[in-house]
Image (tube, rainbow, N blue to C red; front, side, top):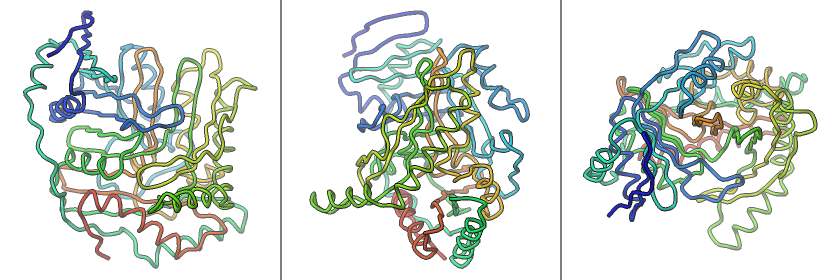
Length: 436
């Protein structure tokens, strides 16, 4: 049934006949631990490829975060353990990078940054799985094979409410545009929260439903004790391979067509949209400037700009920016100097973030932040936490946020309707309705 290919003190590789079944069993086996992170690309073709298929179970060591030095803390923790790390950087680490603050309420209460060395790591490939653990891998394998995975349910079935009214949203768009007219900013990404304080649901089931409806190359299930992130992210924040750094902002989205002909027309419409192209170019310039702070002069390149890629429900415009890290540059500094990602703030970044804090009504937390992994060699891959739900199981608080980029050309009513349209995917996964 299994073929043992190689053995070390901590590693075994198992050949699997049914990888799909095993991955679900392993994840369901691991999700009951107080810490668990599952990353999956859903085998979606993506420039530079999506997430490595990984599952981290249990926390052997947890990174101690020195106040206002979270990025450095992760670097030192990695140097100490030289092991796999899994975790997240929350959006509000912006306050460590710039002179900013976050004063809004947070119903989820995940830490601003959290990383851990797992007890067990599963590295999936096309034919099997590598199990990395100090515990008996054969015992782990047997326990997983005997695990029963329940059928996916019809979803929670409750009701969520927007944190702000339509009138407040429309007024916010107008105020942002006034700032643009005055020359303060060119673009600001404004988000609104949808929430319920009475959500009794299974985060594992929600991830299965969300993945079925909207498979994504940077999807993540992330548990930190009784708090969960369920993500169907299509976007990479940053990847490191050796000295090479890659960032891939998304700006520009359009729905899929009902027919092949309509699909082609919609792709062309996105490719030729002056507004979407201008927004994408703006973020490309911002990312180039961010990478220039920690990469060697002359190495910043844009291998692809305005690339159109198709997913299950949408076409998206993706650009790829790369650079080579400076010698003796800590990997954490590369992340810190580009954080948070410009695709979720606007430009110029610092002023955009200040206006976000002024006009939004909810602390973003891990939303607009990043989930991912760091290898023992110090390579990493992190997504952009969008199209995600956040759940506090202790308080039954479910939340998701929807954003849109406001420019001088934005129509407030259209932006509001776009937010409601973007919310439909998560509402379907939750089997929930909006109450206004």
